[in-house]
Image 1: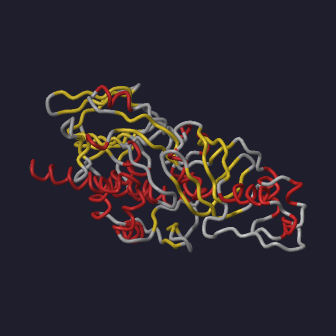
Image 2: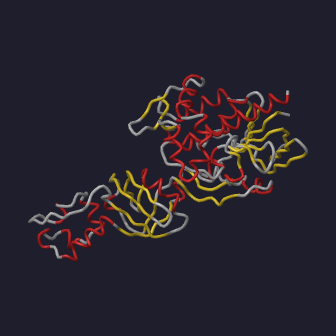
Image 3: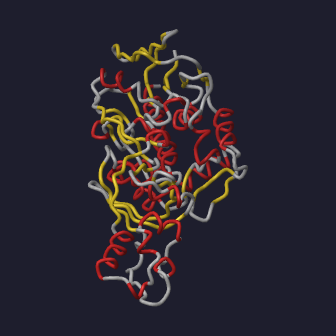
Length: 380
């Protein structure tokens, strides 16, 4: 029997194992660890984002108060220092503040975690978790394990092929926890508009929907939008709905009346204009535009409306999971079940793109492990 069982050998589970060994074992359903971690940052693994604790907390939408204790306890600077000094992973920072391993390979981060983690049991999916007196019995398809503490680090339901499919939530529900339904986050946005002619263009824009809005850099895709602004906004699209897009969010649009064609006086690429504005209007001289045509142009560029939904297949994260109302933010400890802890995406916490999800994975694991170590020391 080990003191702690960690369910899931992803980022937060492995980090918890590094902090707790040799008191803990990790149970992983896949044949190898960190399948999703290898995909992070396009395979380069932006494992945190530079910034002080206050700035970092603001990246977690309505959960910024919930993550506050974890982030202040183990902020980005500590994560960077831990990886460099304890795990021997030097890092570099991109212009937009993302922190990557200097190797530019996510495998470097995974290898460092594995080399320093405790025992990991592979190819065993957890099918039941029960509590008997002061002990947990964690049953897999092959074996049963007993421990005094359990950390659930099984992830959300993005990238199900990596094992992160949210299936463990049915077991947590049996234990009494409320599960917020999962929905995609950090995904591309699919629209009813064909943007093929403008595909590949990077542009600043603002997107607004029923639940929220986002502004920033985006990449035009054949069916919609990718890039930070789209990914940050996608969490608001729980179903298909109408969105409004401002393609010139930082300026008021005034059309210069002259002998040039309309396409040559508007501050956007012609290929994108051809999607947003009728050809006959684009080919007119701007001096010849009617008031109605000018109104149409401004409306198309400043408040373009289209039906949109989140592209679930591209989601890098998820919204939903264990309700944070049932988790003590000072320790990541369950308010429902004694000695049960949660780390990372299994909780209903999501964040901006840019390394913030992994930041919380590591920070929440650090906080949970500190509380467990404190309890273990008091018991001796």
